[in-house]
Image (cartoon, rainbow, N blue to C red; front, side, top):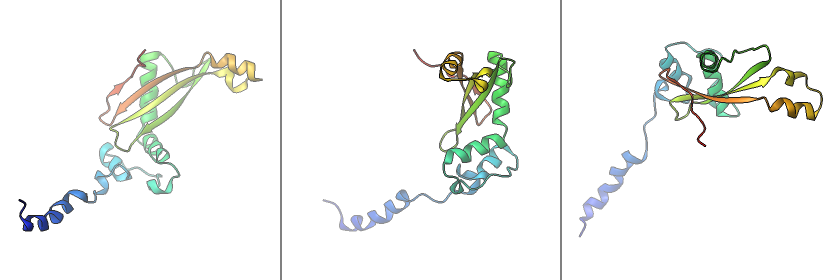
Length: 151
């Protein structure tokens, strides 16, 4: 049999478990201050996350300010020989990160330069056959990896 006084104590016990305390800005991944502390730099020109239509835009802006694109361009040049602007191609990046993740995921797409001037659907389709994509992961600790698609 359960003691009735114990039942009265249960709500008080679970109150501390059910509600988490507010995080300091430097501990909250939804705040610029978290990334300023992480990268030890002052980040300017990024609005609070709530002012963006999509959280990915907030995190992408943070990534740009802390130099993630430059790290990725250097990494794909060393690993694959892809330069940011090649003679016959150009690179485009799509950055994902923030939230609960401890890294930045970056999709690097290598487009044929002729794509910018293609005339018609058939030429575009032909050029897109030469498009290549690679994934680069940059950890908050600076570690770089190149995940491969499993066959």
